[in-house]
Length: 66
Image (cartoon, rainbow, N blue to C red; front, top):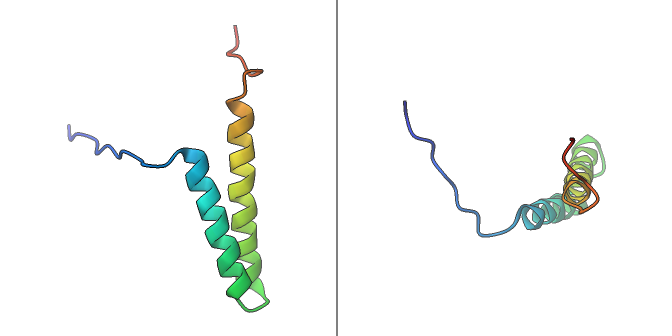
């Protein structure tokens, strides 16, 4: 069986999500109004939602089911 390639990330997951959201928003700012711009903005919102969801899941209020 082949071995899995491991990637050592230099930034945290939250930092990577925030960076992607920022990159999508900047691309949308430069894009012409239309479908492409809307798709870029949607991706930015998805990255921000994923970041909030990850923060919520890692909060101390979340416990494993018993």
